[in-house]
Length: 318
Image (cartoon, rainbow, N blue to C red; front, side, top):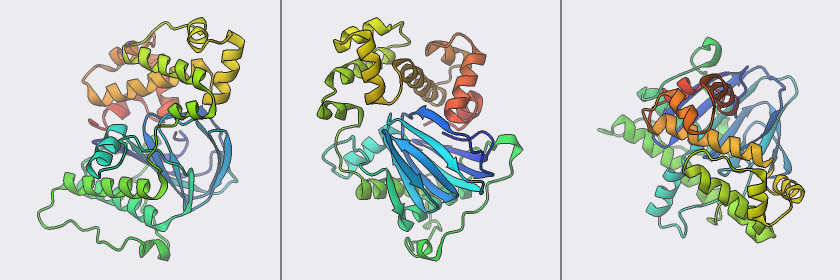
């Protein structure tokens, strides 16, 4: 999730969103949240402390952060130094397609490592993807606060040699294909290095004795696929077979946020997908996911995504 006081550039393409942020440390903590996509984030400058699935991690320059879809995480920037990071959000459908194409045993791989450490090869591939997208101008740039074009990222000598392939296009290679190749390269490398190709995180709650909460999570997700519902706490507690109090406690412990916060975040994820896969007006998208009006939706969306609905919609189709 982006910091709104940082300067930032957003790039969008089929199946991905690339977010490059840089600037002074805001020192503002992020509340627990999740995304509907896989997140591969490179810390370029500065330090951050994050909680991922209840465990605290510290990230420094050169570290790669790997987050699964709907994996709850928070963030808190450290110190007063300049901050810079590069975040790649990858749509689950793209990961599923790539997993199928390479013959993986499952189409729903899961990152098993949150912090990769200083991994120059993956960092070089991420920066290579950013360069390809910039070169072909196939995306739209929406910096906050009229920020200038994002700066070049300088690799360390070790990282420069980690991925020696030329970033120049092959003869006759179309721009879209060049970007697609670079994207596939990043995603496949990340999963080859840091995934055990098992089932998604939320379903894994069954393996640690939280089947009742997993049932309520699936119930919420299935309801929201059909459209915004008026599900109540009583409904969810009944599905889980728990008292309301025990359900609230257990849900927050297992998922990392309250049922209400989870439902709101899920609706914002659905809204984000609709903004880039349909031609619906923003107000209609807001109403379709359960928001009462445009302003309340825009505020919630900006807090969740770091940009307004109209900016996100203009990134282009997934």
